[in-house]
Amino acid sequence: MFTVPIYIFFFAYFIFLIIFTFFSIVNLAHLFHTGAFTFVSFSVTIIVTIVTILILMATWFLLQNVDWQQTITLFDKDWFTGGSNYF
Amino acid sequence: MNVSQFIGQKSYEKIIKTVRRHGTTFIPYITIFIFLALVPVGVGWLLNSVFPTLLESPVGYPLLLLSASVYYLSLCLFFYSYFVAFYLDMWIITNDRIVDINQISLFGRTVAEVELYQIQDVAAEVHGFLPTIFRYGTLTLQTAGAVPKFVIEDVPRPYELQKLLLDLSNEDKKYHAGIAKK
Image 1: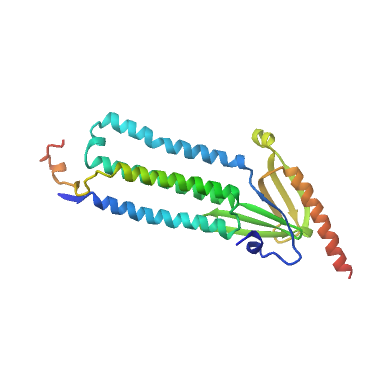
Image 2: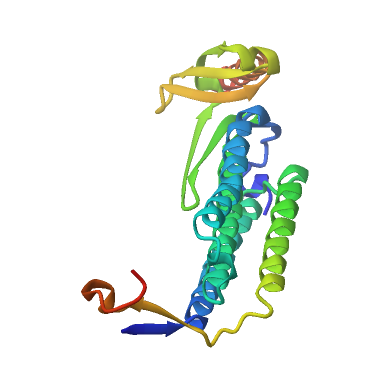
């Protein structure tokens, strides 16, 4: 049986956030570098930033009471041998 | 950095106009992203119907929530990347040349330019229902330069731009003819 605690997925989520931040900064840098930071691009940047903050806040709010020490079974040979009550 | 620095503006050069694609041509992207944003709602409803206990389980709930968060953040990032690629597709018209900046992707960009005096012909085309209503179309420039055909797509008011380019080209030809006589 192979089980992992669910905080592993939380760490994976943080790695995703780092990649997300990197690509967002690259996009912003493109706008600055080409002199395309106008009212339109500024507005879209603000809207995307607000939506991103709302998503992060909602995620944080809904995950507050989660017990991250819980484990999830990724593989169990009983699934194939029929020794489990799952099937 | 500003546009002047980006194109390496010459001392005698003046930026006449910066042209971008018409905003209407970005609407299909917005529609697709709105549709994609609704997908998790449908998936959530389906999961709730088929596996009613999944959203209440202490393991399934946080994992589904993290997945949904990753999905929506990715959607935001893709939308922003599409917008940047769309917005950085631009043509800078100066009194000396046209600089075509084509943002292909986040890490891909081509910059081409044509001297105004090399322009031989400018054709404007408005084709289709939306382009006619919102007045945008394609400009095709025939040039005597290294790039024989220069296409500017989805530009607002193409006929006005065509006239502007022809006028600027004629001015530049006169200037270059004057230099040649000297």
